[in-house]
Amino acid sequence: MKFKKLTILFALMIATGLGSNTIAQDEDYLNLGGAVRYNVVSQHYGGNEVYDLDGVSTDNYATWDTWRLNVSARYSDVTLEFEYRFYPTFNTHFIKQGWLGYDFSDDFGMQLGVTQVPFGNLMYNSHSWWFMTGYYVGLEDDFNMGVKFSYDVGDRLNIMAAYFRQQEPAGPAHNVAPYAGPGAGTYSYNVIPSAAGELSEADADIMEMNQFNIRLGYEVRPGLEVGASGQLQGIHNMALDDTEYGHAFAAHAAGTFGDWSAKAQFINYDYQAKDNAGNLMDRVQMGAYGDPYYGDGVAARANIISAGIGRGIDVDWGPISNIMPYIDYALMTKDDQLEVDGQMFDFEDSHMLVPGFLITAGNIWTYVDFAMGKNHPWLTSQFGSGLGAGHLDDNGRPIPVDDMDWNLRFNINVGYYF
Image (cartoon, rainbow, N blue to C red; front, side, top):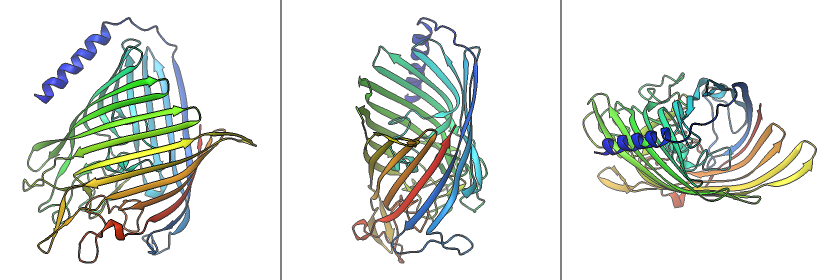
């Protein structure tokens, strides 16, 4: 019944769009661009020094973050947007987006290929280089393979609807059995297979398949949008040849007020997934950038509340034209429990706090961030842990989040965009 309703919605949008006035032809073009970015890092994770695979301390270091290639083109009224990224630090590369677009009218358009999922605040729900917690569970700046429609109703209301058959194509992934699998080598975080004993009672040969999205955005005034988003998420178990459907909902607002920028969002999600024995999982494994999360995975059900504010300040300091201080915060609450030696322990919350500022100097954007986290998979000496039950003690029990210190990472990201 849900599929039927969504199919009818898509048909109505297409019919309405085709019935509108045809747009005037635009001139053909081909634009090439890209970016090169570097990171300077100083981190302090609960007093635990961080080491790489060769036993070298990585508390303080500089690294080549990424370089990317962009192509934008239009021929015969069909547009192309393509972006491919290379991450030397992670020894991987992958497509971020690659879609063909066609506008049936001034109000109605379509994108086909690897395109951004219409969910929550777009393009990002954050001000900093770090994004917010939603990104790390696949619900911010997410890209999948499918078809997306956008329809403007009058001057203020925009409706987006999409169907995604599967995740975006994966590049190279670290072959760390049993974690490596579909989704580990992608830009966006996706659900991937996991092994017995880690997150479930049996192996879980699962992947994302068949996803439906709808997003409503209403422009209260120029520069201020409020909206709501819904997602019907299929998680396919390859061993059982069965797909379970979960959901995600979001209420969101983003706007500019003179020099000020503000964003707020609430997400409720439930990744319905079964392991190979047919058990409903309370945690799922996710991966991106060639690396999966390890051990704890991601809570299959949670709420995420986030908010951020920033203010742009025009300056005339040589090449520097603007400085924007900001602060972003996200809280992830979880409802499940973990059983250890016959006792039940609540999943612990995850916190993310990022004060910082953006420096604009021509084509150079520099993010200076003081990222802080509790139970955050990237802000820890135990990469990939925290979004499930939380960081665990030596007995496998979740450490109460109130007993944790903030893990700290001072990060400067310098990027040249062309």
